[in-house]
Image 1 (tube, helix red, strand yellow):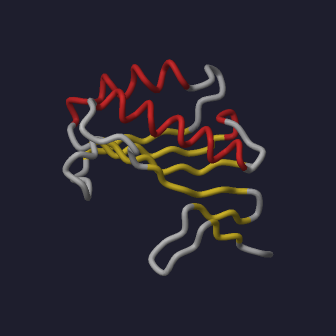
Image 2 (cartoon, rainbow, N blue to C red):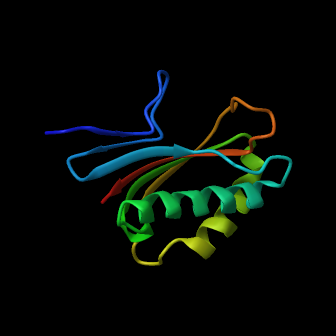
Length: 114
């Protein structure tokens, strides 16, 4: 079984595909904005990554959301509820975490079937 590493570098890969499952993480491409805008940006990135491999957001299996501030949970849910396909939502975990860049309000880890 072949493991495919997308844009592999010395430290990480943009995504890993193994046995029909894709694993990847996204961070905001826009900094200095509010949490909802950063979440929306991350969700667009997730959708684009899946579409590049012939998938879509209905193929999400497991999503872990890391929030820098638990007070942004409502903003996360507003963006998420507007984006997720109702009736096809993945398992989702949300945790508060100190993120690696001070301007990041969110980081999202994804597992999807493709």
